[in-house]
Amino acid sequence: MLREIFAVAKLPHVMDDNTAGLATIRRLTRSGGGVRCIYERAAFDEPDLLADIRRYTAPGEGVRAALGVLMRMWIVDGTRVVISLRDPVAGSASTTNIVIEHPALAQCLIYAFETIWSGADPVE
Image (cartoon, rainbow, N blue to C red; front, side, top):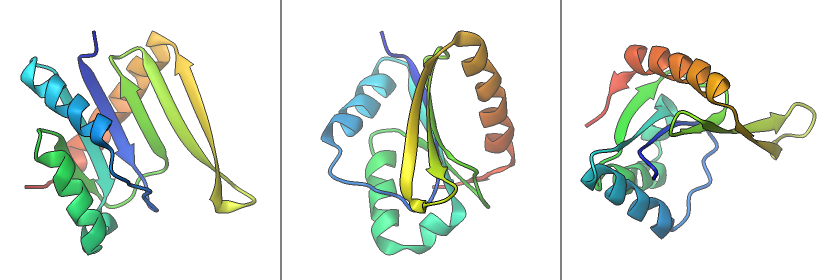
């Protein structure tokens, strides 16, 4: 059963009507789990992105803003990791997504997430 998701959101964001994502946040928070996301601070300067972020905070996503983040990443239940890496040659036009199921790697990345989270600014 899904219990927690840690996410790091790097610009540029590609957000759409993610009804399933919003339902997951609601389900997790109602069952005692949680979702936390670190966004790049610049995302809060863009009205459309700010509106999207507020849609995710409404059902219970915890949010903080960091000056910058290095990549997009999701850590699920401390065992699975999804990393989205930009192609260094093509730039933001091309990404490679990697899914890794490895609890030790996930735990290491949770330490990194918690370090960034503790230094990031709370967002209301």
